[in-house]
Length: 126
Image (cartoon, rainbow, N blue to C red; front, top):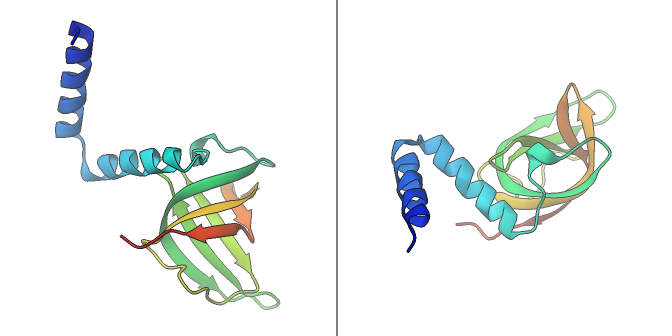
């Protein structure tokens, strides 16, 4: 083992030792997202067709006068993408804490990244 490898390993050990729980969870989510071949949400741009993978933070039903929507915030450790399911009040399996991969075109709404009616795959609960 070279000196550089030992220094890097030691630096990584101390970074993990001093990191907060949120930072460690964000790193874990980013690693899992990369394994799925998903694009980090922080790198997604408007108009791009993407596959993002992460954990649902919040799920909220938003009653509207003409079209109800179900909105879920997907966090992958780098940024949040809001998944908007138009005309839906609930979807089985779409709940906070659930891991999933979503595919669709990124749009911007109020400077937030949004995917309308995404294709999605739920991952097995852990």
